[in-house]
Amino acid sequence: MLRGLADQVDAGLRFPAAPVAAVAGFLREFAEHQHHRKEESLLLATLAAHGADEAAEGVGVLLRDHEETRELLYTLTLFWEPTHALTAEESTAFVQVARTYADRLERHMALEETRFFPLADRVIPGDEQIDLAAQFVSVDVGRRTRSQWAEVIVALENA
Image (cartoon, rainbow, N blue to C red; front, side):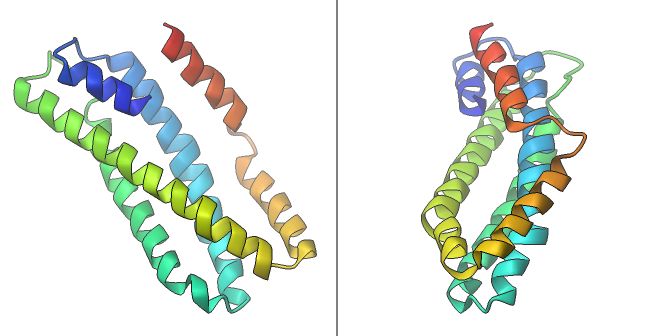
């Protein structure tokens, strides 16, 4: 979705402030505050406790990704409610930041799916995985679920 918004701006269309705000809200609330928080405070700590030395380098990559996406998201927030039409320079900056964020997030998800989640399945005992799942749920209390956010994103795509 973010890449599509960047493509619209890159094509010279009017800056889609409301959709950008909604996508940035999703990224802030779900990706950064829920998903990455679960990884940093729960999953990666549990992997380290189980001596998953093979995860050490990748953990560094994941943590750098988290820091980079936080910084990129902060920059995206500057575009939430522009007080004027974006200049050509501002439009170019938005496109670059949005595409970079999307690229980092895609790389991050691929690393999780191909390396970390399988590693966690191998080294974390089943009973601890159940405990982790319960702790993951506690992080989500009072926040929109992934499916609720999906509805918001689908509504934006269909608008």
